[in-house]
Length: 79
Image 1 (cartoon, rainbow, N blue to C red):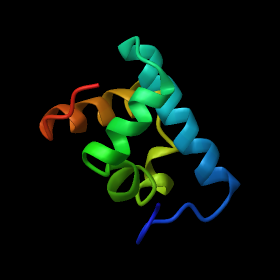
Image 2: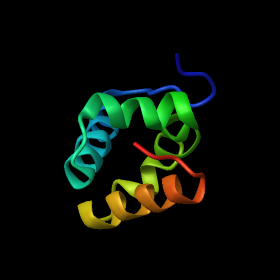
Image 3: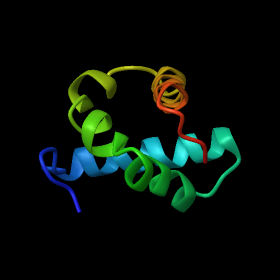
């Protein structure tokens, strides 16, 4: 369940899926495992990915994936 940073439109939803799937590919994990890590374990989806959509979606795929994986590492999140 999303709280403060609910997905407001199809673009944000598509971006969230893009992030999850590309992180999963990079880490060799399933999309479900990455989704759970970004929601259940530390709320990165609601606290970072969705609120920063406007800035993040203008970056390259590599930048986005590296940035989110780096944030996961800072917060001690393993998938």
